[in-house]
View 1: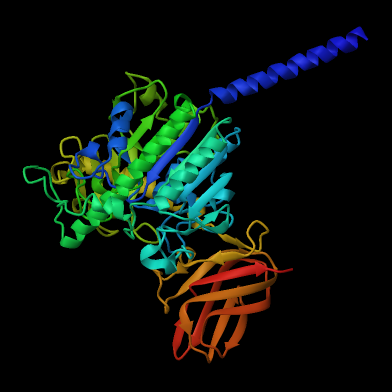
View 2 (view 1 turned 90 degrees about the vertical axis):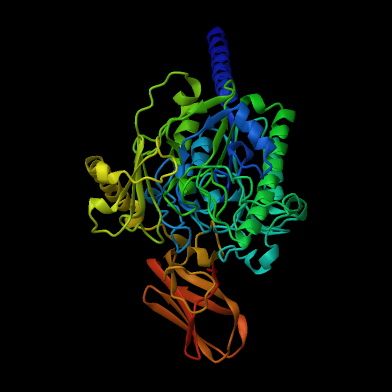
Length: 584
């Protein structure tokens, strides 16, 4: 009996010790709030020299915390977000475009959310995802316990089928996707996303959490509450720079009006971030919460961008340099000038949260932890690769390699000589105005060799060679909707009726009900063809309607293309979206 009691007590104390150790480890792990905005350029803040835009919360946040002054992203949104979530260049993840079926991230990727969820964190996303609208690439498939998002690249865009038809009011009272289901919400989109993020934080305050607040503003369409537009209605957005020697873009009257709307949207975001930071204070979470603020690329429209050349879509600095501010408990008012990037965020969070990265996975980024915590640090010279063209990279067109103080830029053809490139010394010429290549051809050749090696490595990535597929007939999303954002085929598929499109899919065999929604009503007397791996189903239609339906369609199991077109009066019309529901 004595031995039994002794063993029982030893077991009790061992379990208690382990439980206490686990609790202590969780308690020591900080919460993480990652905030990103959409198409807010480097110059759309008061603290980066803009005399017009009102951002007192972010200005103060930058002043009091860690400012990374040389931080870079991709030239457009989906590539930036895939790199942010994975620590990898976007091409490794399968993301190669913002639509055209190229913004679907491979399900095999490990996101920040998956990484932290595996360590006991509760995870939530609120706002823009833009890395796949269908299983298995939705946020709820990629590690998020709670997701409240719009679809595709933006509200009011063709892929976001619940807001597209609202037109000029798509940002107000929207139908959003909560954990994969459409739900109506009341209010302005940025307010909704911030309020729901704060609700998530409060619900999960007793356990480590990761909150990804991903505003879709100030992306087009530029819809802003009247209160915020009135703040800027009478300003001249290009005024105040008359004596500024830095380059400034020409602005049309439309550009100036767009800037007023953007600034209103940015001030609304600033107010919401202020509310979120106050909520962390009220919940006594601030001292154990890492907060990051960044943007995803340069501004879409011409306006102040601190003198830098280019804007969204360009590999010049105006397209890829963005603000990056970070609150790390215990570190105040620090400026870091090292070259850093979106690919560094995942490894940084991993180190801060004591998470081991997968050894077998290539991580292109580097942890910023040493830059945050040390006054003297050895940060090696590092290279960054940039590109942007539709569908796939076009060799040497809008492509760049940045290393140390130097940046090689290509806006030329694939068979060009080194003399057609541009070379800039960013330290001496931060506005990229003086091409120094003619006097530095040896350096340019060296950088081009590294650019070539990087390009070849990335373009041969598994997820580019074998594109991520949408899975149809899986119980995790049934029915499933194929939208225009996910459609591959002709370049620039949008809301056109007569355009070639297809979806890259994996189909589970069985019987399906298939609905076809069109942009506008089609004429009767036509024929609908659904093509699936050589099996063609034909439907004769006699009605003028914007929705057709096929029932008891027997689809084969396969991996490949799904195509559907309506043929009428010499036209071949692509459906706006297709819903497939497996019924057996």
